[in-house]
Every structure is written in C-alpha cells, then in structure tokens.
Amino acid sequence: MKASCSMFSQILKLVPRVDFERLVQKTGAERGAKGLSSWSQFVAMLFCQLGRAHSLREIEGGLKSCEGKLSHLGIEATARSSLSYANGHRPWQLFEHVFYELLERVRGSVALPRKFRFKNKLVSLDSTVIDLCLSMYDWAKFRRTKGAVKLHLVLDHDGYLPCFGVITDGGVHDVKVAQQLSFAPGTVVVDDRGYNDYGLFGRWTAQGVFFVTRLKDNAQYEVVEAHAPPQNRGILCDQTIRLTGLGAQEKCPHLLRRVEAVREDTGETLVFLTNHHKLGASTIAAIYKDRWSIELFFDVATQCTSAYVSEYEGRAARRSLRGSMRYARSSLGAFRHRFVATPKARSGKAVSRAGVRCESI
Image (tube, rainbow, N blue to C red):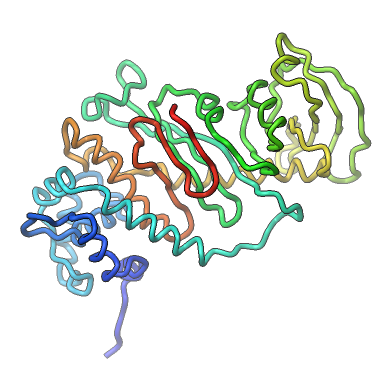
C-alpha cells in the first residue's frame, strides 16, 4: 500500500508540532481551555486562508467534507461556534511567536542570487490599503461608509522578505510614515511617486541613504550637467539637476540625478530621480523595475481572511485583526512571501527586526 501525503499536511510540516506546543505553553494560550486545541484552531484558520473560505460555516463544512483525512493532521472537524470563541478569546501572541520562528527559519534557508553587482542593501518602500467592514471594525475610519487600515512595508530584496511593517489608519499619508523610518547609511531605498517629498529626500541624502523614485511631471528643476547616455540600453538622457521649486532648495539643497528611460514592453517613457551619482543609468532603471516585487507581495499579502470569518466585537475585533492577519498570513507566506506586523499595530508604534527603526507615528 502506497503512503500518501497531502499538500496541506506538507505545508503544516513547516510548523513542527513540538515547537508549536512549546509556544502554547509559553504563552498560556490553552490556560483554562476545554475542547478545541490551539493546534486545531491554527489548522482551521490555515484551511480558511488557503481555501479562501468566506465564513465560519464554510470552514466547518470544508473540514467536515474531508473528515476522514484529518486524523493525520492531528485534529477533528471544528465546530464554528468553538472556532469563533477561540478566535475572540485566546491570545494572539501565540501566533505571533509562531510567525517569527517560521520567519527566522525561512530567512536562513533563502539564498537567492543577487541581481545587481553593487553591494548596497536594496529595499522597497510602499503601502497598500486593506479594506475592512466598518460596522465590525468601527475604529478603522477611512471614509464615511468604508473602513480600512493601511499596511506600510519595507521589503528587503535579499530574499524578497519584509523586514519592517506597520499598520496605521487608512488615511495616514505614506510620507508621514516614511519620515519616521531610519535606514543604515548606504542603503538604497526604491519607492514610487507617493513618497515625493523634498524634505525627506534632503534628510536621506544628508544621512548617506540613497533613493530611487519617479519624478513628478510638474517638478521644477534646472539642469546642471548632462551626461552621455549608454547606447542600446533604452536610456534617453542622464542629467545632474538642481531642484528649483518653491522652497525646494531649503528642503533639499543637494544635487540630484534625473534619468529618462523607455519601457521595453510598452514604449512608455519613465523619468527617474535619484541621489546616487555613481551607478549606471541603466542600473537605476533596473532598480526601479525590481520594485515590482513589493507589488507582487501585496497581491498575496492583502488577501486577508474575510471580515465575515472573524465574528468579534469591541476589543476582540482589535485582537482578531492583529492576530488573524498574523497567523493566517504566516503559513501562507511559507512558500516565499512574508507579512510582518507589529505587536502595537493599533497605536502605530513599531520596532523593526532587521535594522529599520520607526518612532511613534
């Protein structure tokens, strides 16, 4: 008789049961609990995430439909009432510990070849809005009839794993968060035009932090020096410029670099702005192209568990948002992507685990 191992059980092997039970004891997640175990809760919510269930009833029905195959996972079909109670009352810190242990394990195993020859740390900075049900998460004010939070993320291109993340209210501007971040000198930060702020550019340049971004169409500048563009690289021009807009010199008195490049697929002309004067113009364009990795990450990371699955109210709603987003994302991200949220996501205070620091927002 051939032994078979389902794909779901292979995913669960990324979280050893012995390590999971150790964290259960450490966090006291099952203190006074009866019936549903934390492992069953974890497996059920992981099933919800991978199966894209939209309600507790779908989770219950899906697990019962394959009840004969659940024994090798160490669980039984979970009742939706028990799962709802466990999600609302058990500590989310358990799944935070599970996530960080899994993240460290994957970080040690990921060794992708470097795309660029320069040795500077390359990171992408971006944000995405996560829609929430306003009637359930009444604290997540975004619009009059819509609730949302915003995930601000720093993605490390060494392995394409996030090294910092913070959740704020949906209306918080990207620049406000970026101004609180501190990067090590020599880091190359690539972001989009939503982070165009001359004061931010001036501070990063003074600190020895490089940036690559898109230049806005209405930006005012004067050309200080024009450089010969490389041949057959899709580069139209390479210029050293000085910002001349209202108050621009007070905020960013440094000379910057303007690079025009043509997209190979669409023929669209893109204009880049950077403070790195030594890299080749084609390298600047390639760095910004690699920023697409954070968009691909958001495409997976923001497919959060449906709000209809988390039947909580009041403070339990806040715990469920922080907790369910951690443990639902953590196992799905075991393939490649990772979602890093902070313990104090509601207040906006965060501490990085990879050299990026954020103060109170």
